Amino acid sequence: MNSIIHTKRIAFVGAGSMAEAVLRGLIERGITTPGQVFASNRQNEERLQELRERYGVEASCDPVVKRERISSADIVVLCMKPKDVEASFDELKPMLNGSQLLVSVIAGLTIRKIEILLDTQMPIVRTMPNTSSTIGLGATGMSFSESVSEEQQELATKMFEAVGMVTAVPEDYLEIVTGLSGSGPAYVYYFMEALIQAGIAGGLDENEARRLTMQTLLGAVHMVERTGEEPAELRRKVTSPNGSTLAALQTLDRYKFPEAVAAAVFSSAKRAKEMGAEIAPHIR
Ligand SMILES: NC(=O)C1=CN([C@@H]2O[C@H](COP(=O)(O)OP(=O)(O)OC[C@H]3O[C@@H](n4cnc5c(N)ncnc54)[C@H](OP(=O)(O)O)[C@@H]3O)[C@@H](O)[C@H]2O)C=CC1
Ligand SMILES: O=C(O)[C@@H]1CCC=N1
Image 1 (cartoon, rainbow, N blue to C red):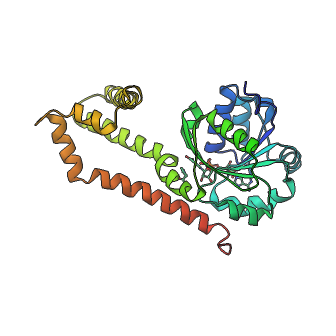
Image 2: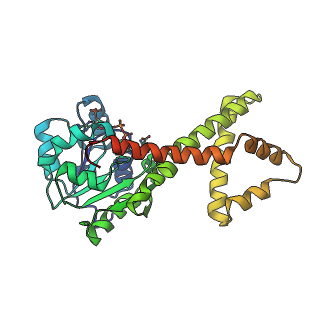
Image 3: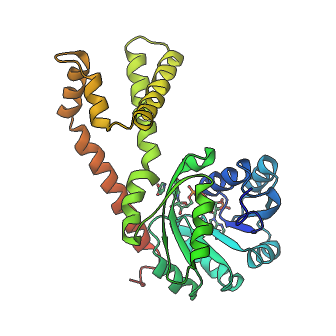
């Protein structure tokens, strides 16, 4: 068990997919115990029951319990949607203090805005994780407010390394991280859906098409990892002169595949910035 984290009490504010991804990763990898974790939401008791049953954590939306658990937590993780930030922060403000570490996973919300909205100079770690944290294979970009100490940087890094890889970036780059790896799993699933559908359209049964698709992606990712070769070089090795792969790649180019992917990444980044700007728009 990791010595820096295992004594810390962690309170999640927001109990949706991202909170579950991180808390599940932390618990299943033995980085923290269920007893150290508290999860809360606005009102969805059924969802809290689900988290209690699945992970053995304490979970409540009772205002008195919330106040007690959040104000006594060492790490408070903000996991609500951007649209719910303002209402949630109003409730949260009196529960926070300078000895806690605040971690945000909220897309687009800047450290400066968090400081202004919560009227605090407490240490803040702004992150952009992804849902693969659920199985310990997340990719998280992270930036720190000026008041985050080296020890707290290490703590936050360890927390997210427990659920995957972490890269620290200047805050301005967190939007592009959102476009690449935050939203990225969705593009990969979309690509998988398209491959499966193409296989089915070509006559394969769904299960076969699904298994072939999964193994193809898994194999390709491991090839990049294990051979250390660039994706472009590995692509060339699949592509025989005048062969079937070349025909396929030319078709993808006709549909402007690389441009489409780049445009998707930048659209996500742009939208993340907009979502941040839409939160308390009077603050610039
Ligand atoms: N999903 C993803 O892949 C990623 C998401 N993110 C970020 O994570 C954040 C959460 O996203 P996600 O988990 O998908 O969202 P979900 O909709 O799954 O969960 C949002 C949670 O916030 C809770 N909530 C809403 N209002 C309040 C409030 N006032 N006080 C306490 N809790 C509240 C909701 O509770 P209730 O149900 O009771 O309303 C719900 O549990 C977003 O800001 C998103 O930008 C970042 C990286 C990746
Ligand atoms: O779609 C969203 O807004 C969030 C941020 C990154 C992934 N999901």
